[in-house]
Length: 414
Image 1 (cartoon, rainbow, N blue to C red):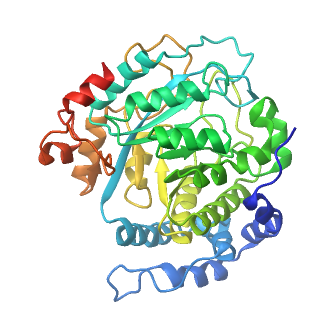
Image 2: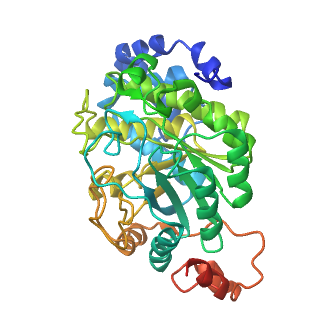
């Protein structure tokens, strides 16, 4: 049985998304000029955007083909806003894939049920071993990722994994199937901080076409998952749309922006992050139905920064190094680094199917060095356990580096 629509689903249904998309397609250079005058730094200013917020109507203009040709001005305005709201801090995290077993059939995914690929689900001890490798590289923000398999990746399994990793990683998030209120509550009590779910596309018809079977086929259950997670106490919520999955990428970005705005208003104690992954090669051999150019990709990130200045904007290693190095100077505030998208990929790569190919293969230390050279501060750790009586000296704990583990933390990972 399908889940009933959640609060945002009802808000989205009342939104004239097709009208906004048409507004974007038809925006004129004069309309772009009008919006840019509000957000581009003035000639004698200090690099601060002009007062006034960007609404969905203005966002549609900033996403327009007419605005693509004004990318430099748009990027400068986004950069000024990012520096004003976030300074030069960039949070680094790593995905830790625990399983690629899956009971859902999503036509674009390398983990889809029925694909003849090597499957693997890590034991809790194996997850801890992967965690130790990430901790040694400096990470304290970890995203646990799995396919949708309610038996191999059960609620009990995830609770055990979170409990095992929590002494070392103060910030743990999951990107798995959606769960009930009770399961999210259990996970938060075990130490979970964040929940990431990409709606993939907000186009209901297209969503049904590409999610042909399994738990993920339920559009409304997935869309309302953040309301359940936030209600259970999750402090960080991550949303995203997979660009290239639906023909109208601008409509998806507009819906994503509306979703982010709703979550920020409704759950104001949480941090909301947004990502715009582009389809990459995978075992599914799924081709994008529309190619979002590099200029349009940067345009989307810059426009989102101006729409919701306080959003954490995330960029993964799907994108090449040059793109990541550029976007961190414009709008991005959270980045993965040194990533593997297969279970066990840090300790024993090549033993299971990866979800998708990555483009930025630089090790974490090299990404951090790039940030420092560009004048930014790589943040390995910005969350702290409420109680850790066995932790070492404060100076060591604050470094977030590879030698910051207490005896209890080392014991937790084995």
